[in-house]
Length: 69
Length: 73
Image (tube, rainbow over the protein chains, first blue to last red):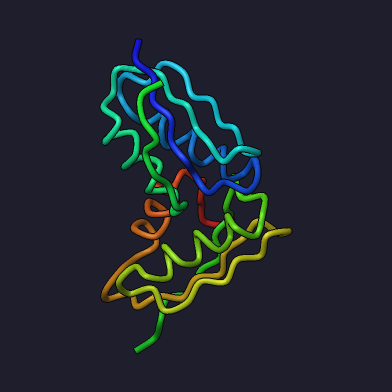
């Protein structure tokens, strides 16, 4: 199961919750770890990293793809 | 022309940056004239041009961001 890491400008749990909820709407998401302190999100699943990034972007937070981990 | 006004209950917002993201994204929607969010009350006061947009579109847009929104009863 591939997992991908993203930088996401989250500053609190509320922001992390929005990211988690948007990712949960995607097909093929296995696990989402939101690390607010490091402003990172690690997502494992079969969805493409582009779809994952698009879902995160919809929360209005600045974000960028780091790579596969 | 009377603009539509409504108070929405918004869930999932816990800090100022959540508020800023919503105000920016929803504020840019066509037809939205103003949106003022009260973080403590977890409400959003929205005024919009009814011929351009409607509450359902605004609520769906907030939902799309990963927050929850519903019309205050």
